[in-house]
Amino acid sequence: MTSLVTASNVSKHFGKVRAVDDVSFEIEKGRIMGLFGPNGAGKTTLLKALLGLTDCEGQLSVLGLDPFKQRKELMQNICFIADVAVLPGWIKVTQLLDFTEATHPNFSRAHAEEFLSRTKVRPDARVRELSKGMIAQLHLSIIMSIDAKLLVLDEPTLGLDPIFRKEFYSNLLNDYFDGERTILITTHQVEEIENILTDIMFINDGRLLLDTTMESLPELFAELMTSGENAEKARRMNPIYERDVFGKKVMTFENVDKEHLAALGEVHTPSVVDLFVAKVKGAAA
Amino acid sequence: MIKHQFALVKREVWEHRSLYITPAVVGLVLVLAVLTAFVFASGYQEIVDIGIVGAQNIAGDAERRAAMFALLMGNTAPFLFAGAILTIFYCLDSLYAERKNKSILFWRSLPITDAETVISKFLTAAVAIPVIGLAVIIVTHLVVLLFTSIYVSLQGGSSVFLIWKSAPFFDVWAGMLVFMLLLPIWFSPFIGWFLFVSAWTKRSPLLMAFLPLVIVPTLEYWILRTHLIWDAIQTRFEQLPMFKGIDPERLFDDHEFIADAELVSLIGYIDIGKFFTSPAMWAGVIVCGLFLTAAIYVRRYRDDS
Image (cartoon, rainbow over all chains, first blue to last red; front, top):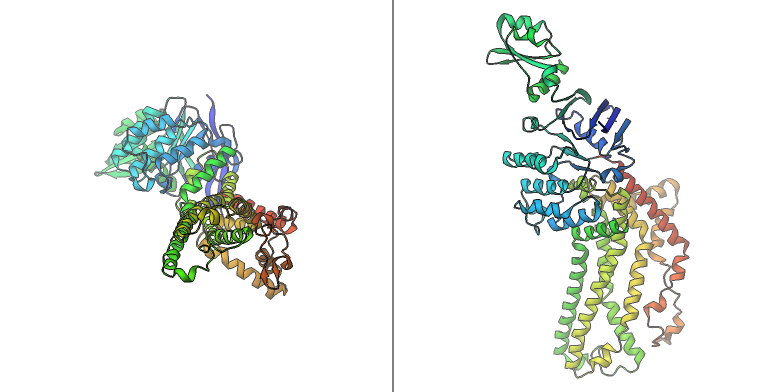
């Protein structure tokens, strides 16, 4: 497999604050990577470094290019949605298509128009006249009509209602993702996308807490629901995190013998959200 | 590159509708003013007979040409004033608004360099604003002259003879084109400065643009007891190296204006050679280049979103 993104020892600090602290990872072609982290964890800074919007220390290569120095070349093969609100309010839908067509060599206007015709977005409308959901559809229709090798989505569905959010991701999967393209996505709505991801990364305080494939989660992690004496025994096996649910103890374990655990209670694979909380809170404890 | 610039400048016109609304409003006001003047004038027919446009008794070709020249130029000056203000506001907004409304993140997601973007904003100020302005000026001239023709005809004069054959259209329009394209080059240090402020300031670009123009020369005088910066700003407004010297003796004879077709010409006075060999002009272009470079650098490196 070929690596689309290679980061080694990437750091970025603002004054004394280390927004990204010595992070190394790879993203391979054809993967859908979810990047999760609490607010202020360094997600956006890391994405900005990947997109060449900010410089950083360490080695960073995206599609074999230095993102900061070769941003123009990079942007021909990379797309990103930074936030739903970034399309300027004054622009008309047709003007947006005209402009993108004139400046982006890999943009298919026909594709974008076809996609838009399935929405309520009128071609002569200005962005400021559209609802938040329609702006997201418009932005997505442009992004999906660009033949890009890497798509970066930073909180693409922020502030949208659940219907739009579901539609957004189903469009993304059905109309865009073809196994050749690669998607990197961050969001707080982890539940909505965990079933489309192939890989996940957790970041907190600028450091990488986890970088693995979705398939390997059941091997790596286990969640035990137990109580009483068994809880005491389980606690001796060093769970990374423990919480109370309806009077029972729920413990999250990493690299643990599952058969051994099964003797102590109910064992299953933690959801990404629970794992995220366990990793972030566990690391802080 | 050129295709990009075309698209980028077009985008500026889409975004800043004031680029064509401002000259259109000026043109409309001028046309209305001329119409109002005729309405009032027609009430005092006997008195205005001595007026320039309505009078049948303007003697020579040169006098008629001079009268038309004055009419056209008089209907041009307000555009230049409005254009200067428009350029200042456009420049200050152009790299500031995109940061305020965060659309910079979308623009930067397209394969366009920061240099291309900043240059397109400069070209909009230095080329698009004058060209759009001139187009509106020409339309305004034609409309004003059309109404003048009607007025003259109603007074019993020959509008073809007095106006359409006398007005030095080509001279005024071609001269204005050259003038309006050279003027932004002469004032380019200010355009560069305004664009830089627009890219750099976090708030109130207007204040941040004009305060230093007062504070820096004041500080220079307090500390160094010199006034080089103030002189540089002042001479920019006083010594535009674009016109041939005018010899008053050729124009006036015992305080009487000598009408000479050769003299009543805008092109005749513009000296392009003088402009392009002026060290002050090139110095200004270099200063503009430095400010634009700084604006590109700030847009590229600053991360305040």
